[in-house]
Image 1: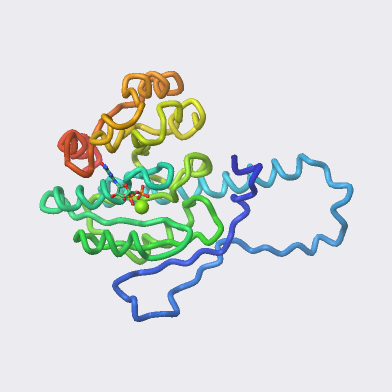
Image 2: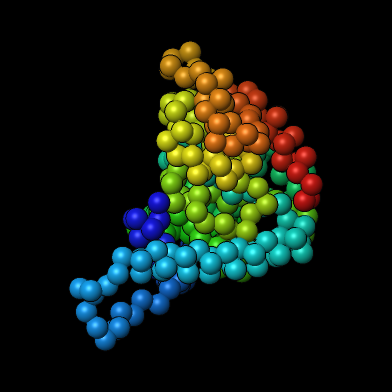
Length: 263
Ligand SMILES: Nc1nc2c(ncn2[C@@H]2O[C@H](COP(=O)(O)OP(=O)(O)O)[C@@H](O)[C@H]2O)c(=O)[nH]1
Ligand SMILES: [Mg+2]
């Protein structure tokens, strides 16, 4: 996890508003100061130092996440953090969801990727305002990045905010963004063992969407087996099986969103 790969040490990140795409100088925010003039060498450092640093980073993240959560409460915004491995269908699900729910609630999206504006552009084409955060070499969004994006989005009350996290089943599990619910998307092409291999993501999620059900005839994926594995790490996890391509099951997802009591 993050204390091993060092991703929590805070890279600079870029935040883009596709509405102002002519602004080629898009705001660049350095989220952590990285001075290393400790005045001593590192040769005798105790390995505990690495662990302490990560505790501090997560504590700082949690404070900002709590502020984000208060912001959502104050505006009656339902914030859903969508997490998955790359390519499981998060953006496709969001495109369909925007098309279906946009008359019911105002919808906003914060997109997280290491590079490119591609997903934010897809979301804007689907009809929702989007802010793209590029994390550079970073492998997750953190609460501070979301706080920065919120300042740009000007979210109305009683609305719906989706955060599409960086595609990664490991590090995003560690970072509370202040969301109301975490939704993990797995697709039937990824293998039914993923909840066992990446348990933290499934432990910290409220809903598991199993996507690409249209491909079930072509892959060795047993939905019941995947659900059994996921329940073994999180007995409270809810499940919805969908095909974002054919829209099969998508009504259950829309109903689930509207049943969440925040909006
Ligand atoms: N067959 C099938 N393909 C899908 C489905 N959902 C997404 N895809 C495809 O999977 C690929 C990755 O989708 P994308 O939404 O970009 O995934 P993300 O990386 O999680 O945002 C794209 O080629 C999509 O068209 C689905 O339900 N069925
Ligand atoms: Mg995407």
